[in-house]
Length: 563
Image (cartoon, rainbow, N blue to C red; front, side):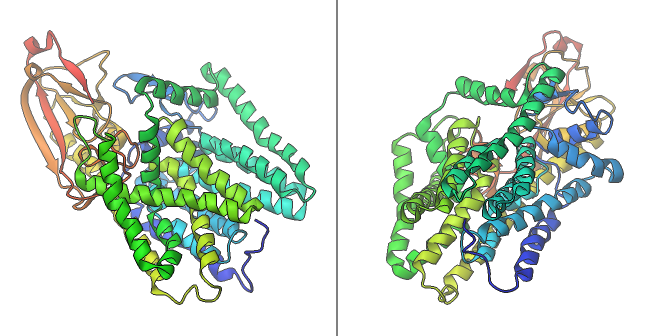
């Protein structure tokens, strides 16, 4: 990160493309239904419009009984503060909320280019690979805090590097504020503090005392912890740490399975990035590259089956999903090896930062966060891409980089895969919205109750539905109770409580799933599966609609959680 990779001549075109391309790619998803945890951030932003100093001062039934929002949403409130003015001025429809997040997406694109030009000769290629990765495009089409966190992260890193280069303390002040903003968007942003601490000590150049400016974000986060302790009885930053620790203590932690799952998520979410790094291998030995990929699709699935990975009942991983897991796991392992070899070969400040950045995020995703998901993998996109591009530049002679069709094919593959995964995820979100609207129209005069949450919660509430409270059931004869098949925190009525049952089916995206337990797809949580997405036949989305039986059946109500 010494500036040697800066582009020569005019950089106006690359800057414009890096800024505009994320907006153009995300524009088709402006009407995407709120999905997974999107409603938590929307509800928080709506609450802020009336109570701006008490961001989590309300309750929500997200886990089958009402709980304070600060216990449900284990994320800081900066995204809600960002969204609140847009919703207040223009309303809370999907295109307004998604449209507000196009600015952070553009900031990530430009921030990636600014950081990349310090590390490699082809910063635009690196930026395009980040933007065209599945994890970026899907994360950018949600209303969660990951993209905002990454945008602040990249600009904080860029300004800190400028401060080291120019020995100008103003950059460090602004960078410190942006570091705190990143952490107040998502707590993982705190990890930028030790990363920049190490970089500053390694880079030297008479600016080692600049590490004192890292006290700026430490002080801001300390004030946040103090303020939330006064508001909610405990500091929310530490509370998030305790939440992850308690979750792992309750569910148990299989280190081998988590490590392999982390690699499969990394390889799948950054598949085009890893393939781009392998382009130099292809030029060197096509058969060696093909053989290596063959190991992934043949040997690794067999080893995972032998080790008993992903065989938990009732949904062991299908064989065709294991093959994909083997390929993605190989690509994820390859990126990890790139980080280590780049550090050994170069031994400069950039290689140290990239290795710590990549390894730190991967370790956090596997062993610190309460579960592995693609959202946690998102910060890997930038260092993973830079490592792949640096490796490509090192092995391919200067001036011949564009002479092969293989790199261009990788970019086409990247765009196709990212759009395919994004469309599949948008289809899944849209089904929940459509199902809620259809069920709401058929209420038949009685109350409509539902279990399951995510975006389905938001749209059922818009239709007048009420979430089941297992601690205080208020079912009446003739009420409807809706249970989605593909969701979390569900509850089901016992047969004796049901007078009439109907199952609604909705056609899924035909060939790829992002959240489907039988397929092993768990983009937002590896509880659903060890892969972020799976290519294969996708079962229909089903919603069970029960009409509650007469008073006699309600004397001993039988409602039980569904795993």
